[in-house]
Length: 179
Image (cartoon, rainbow, N blue to C red; front, side, top):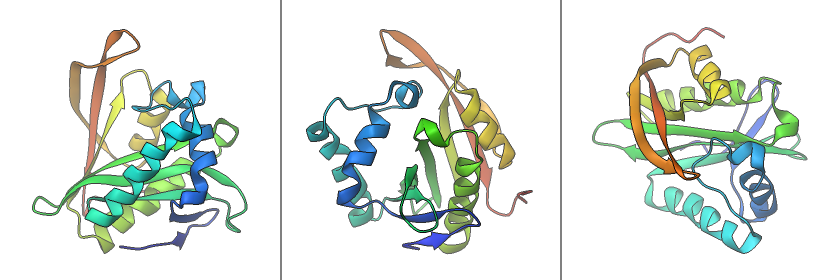
């Protein structure tokens, strides 16, 4: 797996234990977790997420990267591939950004790089995403990367005392991505 790489405006590097405060800031922020599957209320709780990142790498079932400025001075968010199924050559993509970095194209730029890595370096055939139906920003990112809607999983998760729908988006290797 590619451990670290640069895009035009970003550095993508593996999540480190020292990123715990940034991960906590993101995964405890109400605007970030509104459409995200996990949230934490303390640094201590966030250790679970940090262990999850480490386990993915150790078991080769995924890779997550910190999205940073090119000099690695500012942490913007995280992006990764998880649930890698080598037999089926597929993985799920996920991402989140701290709100002060929203609307700058960083997720799209990082996701393009991660998809290229998944297809070209990791040999994936399919990358997919589950997105809460109300999360229009993430849907736009996936559409910009030519992910195709495959349908809706109706009331498939219980969140905030109600059932939510998840949209399924996917992209196959070999499909051209416009930049």
